Length: 119
Image (cartoon, rainbow, N blue to C red; front, side):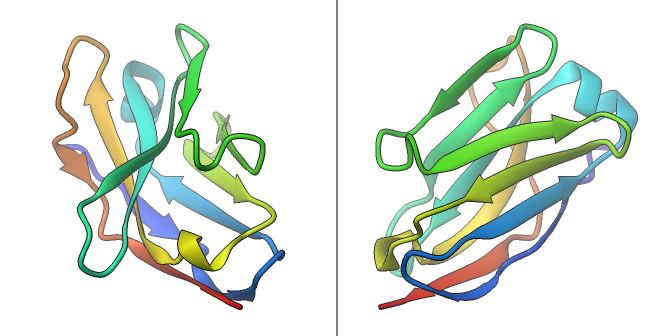
């Protein structure tokens, strides 16, 4: 069973930075594609960023390109999301997700962590 545990959310002013982390098992970290999604109140969950450490492929939503960076720490089996130049519209619950490389749907999720950006 895939376990994903997020941490690092909080309240920050616009223009500030936050770093989210997602802890998982070594097996999941090394075999799954890992990603970050977010869900704002009244909106659907949306893709933020994803990376597969085996293939080296990384993708970002247009809305976060140049501001957010996804990275992996294979010593700690964690996936990080560095968020810089935060905007109020980045306010959401952020979820860590995982899927096998051949799957199209993301079906494994963490519990989520709240990020609030004040103007």
